[in-house]
Image 1 (cartoon, rainbow, N blue to C red):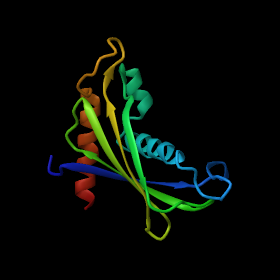
Image 2: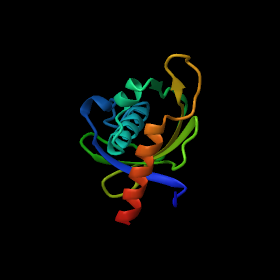
Image 3: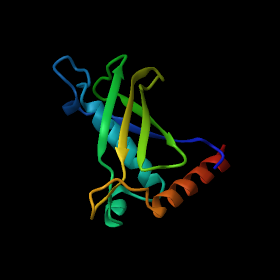
Image 4: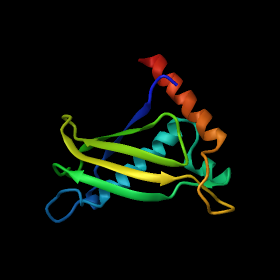
Length: 145
């Protein structure tokens, strides 16, 4: 693959239930936003997370972190940028950036997941279907640039 990384952007509107008494998104909600972006990325690749499970694989989160710069507010439209290696391995590190409507950085984050075989509950290489879906997405992304 030409690119070392593959990127995806997802938009999400802040719900009232996501905010605290100050009207700011509660800090732990950003981990949920990361999950939304990551699962939408898989869907955009043509391989929804449910399909990975049907193939016999899980992707548990092993580590998660976030650095907060500014809080998002109710009803703001956020853009969540996802970046991950184009060549997958058993361990998957994903970087996130959460931007507000005017492009200000609100949060940077990272999650590390592992491909786990459902039968053995042991880490494993990503399935061929995942690698092919990522390759197709990356090729399409390169053609659009």
